[in-house]
Image 1 (cartoon, helix red, strand yellow):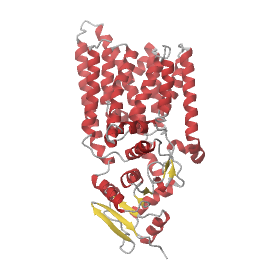
Image 2 (cartoon, one colour; image 1 turned 90 degrees about the vertical axis):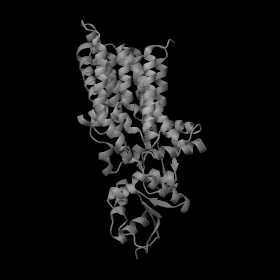
Image 3 (cartoon, one colour; image 1 turned 90 degrees about the horizontal axis):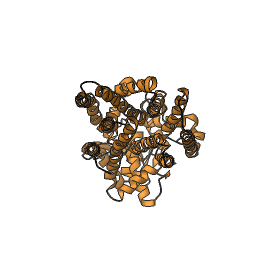
Image 4 (tube, one colour; image 1 turned 120 degrees about the vertical axis):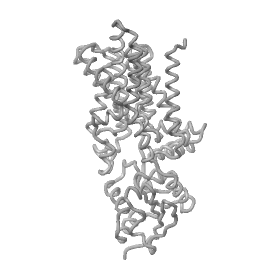
Length: 495
C-alpha cells in the first residue's frame, strides 16, 4: 500500500494524542478511586489466571459480576511493563487508536479525506475524552470496539464484514455492556430507514437481529441473578439513593457543549438536518440513530453520564465530518475554491478556541477524584502494621483503594450489586464521620465489626472535620497521624 500525505497526517494526529495523554497522566502518581478495582482484578488474573469473582475484601466478602476482557488486557500488559504504568498506557493507546477508526468511518461516510482527517483530529482532542485521564478506563476499549463495530456494519454487505461484526460484538460484550446501545441503535436505524421507504439489505436486517438477540441473551445470562435480587433497579447498579443523582445525571445542552465543543455540535446538528431532509444518506442515519439513542438514554438516566457523553460526542463528531464535506463541496463549486484551505484553518482555530476552556477545566479537575499520596501512605502503613483479617472503615469511594493499597477488608466500595440494604449501609458510613454521640458510633462500629477507621484528607474535606468527634481515648487509639489519621477501635461495648 502506498503511503500518502493523508496517512502521514493521520499518524501525526495518532502520536499527538498519545503524547498529550501521557503528558497529563505520567506525572500523576495516583488514579481515580475506581481504577484501583481494575488494578486488583489485573493483579489477581496475573497471579491465578482468573478474575476475582469472589472477593474476600470487598464488603468484608462478596460476589462480583462483570465482563472480564479489559482486565485480561491490563494483566497482559503488566507482564511487559509495571502494572500501574500499564494502567495508564493501555487506555492511552486505545483512545489513540480511536483516531484511525473515526478516520475510516468518516472517509466511508463522506468519501472525502479532508473531512475524515478533521473528524479524526476532533475525536482525539474533544474535551470529554480527557475526563478519563486518571482512570484505568474500560471506556477506552469499549469505545474503540463499538465504533469499529459500527464501521464493520456499514460495510456488512462486503465480504468478511459480517463475520467481523460478530467477532467484534463478542469482544465488546466481554468488555462492557455499553455496546448494547449501538445494537439498540441498529434497530432504530432499521426502523428509520423503513419509515423513509428506503432499501435495507437482507444482510443488514439479519446481522442486526442476530447481534441484538445475542447481546440480549448474553446480558440476561450474566445479570439474571442481579435482576432477580434487585429487580429493575439493577439497571442503576443498586446505587444508594444519594449517589443516583451524581452517577445518572440529566443531560443538558450546556453539558453537551462542554463535552463535545461548540463546533462539532453545530456541525453534527446540521448533518442531522441535511441527512434527514435533503440527501437521505443511510450511513449518516446510522450515526444519527446512535446519537439519538445515547441522548435519550442520558435524558432518561438509564446510563452513566460519562459513557453516555462519550458515545454521543463521538457520534456527533462523525456526523460533523458529513457537514464539513458538504461545505467543502459547496465551496469547490464557487469561483474561489482556494477558500477551502482558509476554511479548514478557521474551523480548526475555532475548535481549538471553543474547546480550550472546557479542556483546561477537565484537566484541572482530575485531582478531585484522585487520592493524595498522604492517604496512600497511610493505607500502606496499615498493610504493614495490622492484622490480615482487619476490617477498615472508609467512605464507599475509598473502598477499592483500601482493598488495593492496605489489602484489608472494607465496609463498602463502589460496586453495589448484590449488597442488601445498601441505603442503610451507605448512610451508616456517613453517620460514622458526622456523629458526636460515642454510644451510637460504638453500636455501628460493632455492627460492621470495624477494627480501624481511616480519616483521609479527602474525607476531612468532604465532612469538614479534622478528627472524629466521638473518638475518646478509652475506646479509640490514634495509631497513625501524618495528615491522614487512622484510628484503632478498641472494641468497646455499650452496657
